[in-house]
Length: 476
Image (cartoon, rainbow, N blue to C red; front, side, top):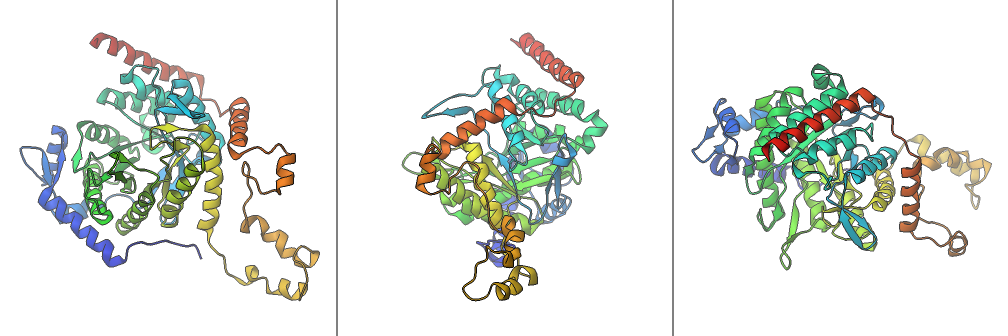
């Protein structure tokens, strides 16, 4: 049996659903985009003069049902396509604007983004990757540079941000160049996008723009309600789930009005409790994992793919980082959140740690074994083997051939962790997990060469960036 962890009863999920519908009908959600307001009005949504949309429950139900029950994230290499469907859990890298180096952190660069993508391309448990930010290029062009860094250094799906209408239009052109044209882009986009509501209960102008411009091309989209618990949502977990559910539902409705059947990932698993002493949003707190599990259950209620974190507040790859990543990751994973986001992420969401990405790969291997559960059948019960070996025997002998047949499936191996005796560990150098992870990062970056992107496509990406530079120069 494969385990499913549930924090909520079916009645409690329904109560949250009803509370969210009440929020949507009585309080509403503000859409800052005039275009979005008109789109909502066109299907009968009540939008007032301040841009606040109030949704009738029937409208919510009608449009949420139009969203697909499963989503495919397409890769440049079709063998790397990622399928999001009920019960399946996949893992992604995190993102940030800083790179951890020892006890320090520096701003991330375009080259860091390239190296990050290459590392993600090589690490088996990274199913798709998220960009880190190129802070050494003009801010207005960061999205295009990040796109190029990812597209040229991984064949896996990747998710990116868009900072403006011009930015998302350029990214669509870049994605079309990789796909082989805009018609092909509608079938197969390696790039997908995401936007988060501004809690409480607001969709920004840019979020609405990104949704609108990418919708005709069927580009998958992450629709997020992500609050700071006790700051931008109520202090109780259940009230936060109700509010962020309302935010995400309104985003799903808007996307389905734009394009029926658009692939959407429904995400209310990213909210973080606030530390009332510092006003910081805590990512490694166990409550973040519980929110992720609750979000996964609510997404299942709607039949939609979901997401959550594996996160840490630690600044370095230490014991705190390890236990926070494992705990915040395994809880929503066992709740069957379809995406566990954040491999390699550190220091809330500000930074990435290349060594931590390697260590998190090992943590994910252990998580996957837990997700497999316990397989019970005549073969795995091994009754014949127990009889053959008998009382006082050993299951390492030829009499227990079942041991060798099942060993790899039943247990896990380590790549940078250590399970030797102290004597053997010291004899092999006595290296810590961080030291071994650093060596593996260096090895991957020295030896791993992703499948190159066609030169003509790279040239086209460069042309789009150069054109954006010229347009930026004209404005300044």
